[in-house]
Length: 159
Image 1: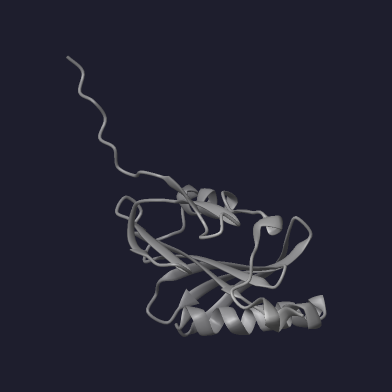
Image 2: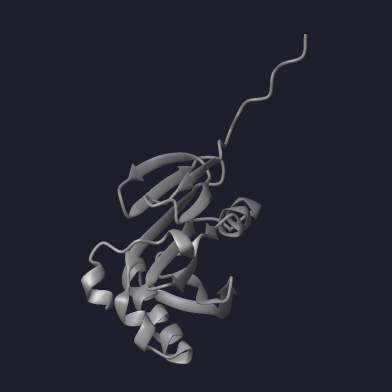
């Protein structure tokens, strides 16, 4: 009788609190809060995270400067030192974004993306000690955003 293959990675589709975004999280969820979701894949030894925050100032910043703000915010959020290997401008459904590929000072490799959509910031990251795999590519490619569903926590600051 043939053996059943072991299920090594479970991929779950997670929705934002307002169902304004969705993403496939590889591995096992290790943290699940209102504005942050983190998982760890034992197969690839990679940690994944998505964070979302209201960013009302975004509407007043021109796109070239917005990407500079994104890079600063990403480096703050990452909290690791190291060098940026590659920076790539991205767009999702017409909304500006940025990708950073970093070699951290501890030797780990991180890939990070951030997008600003209707005054909301979405930050995604993968961090591994080895190399980034197809699993990380699928994680980033699975991100979807639904701008029409975004509701702000304090709408008076947007008027």
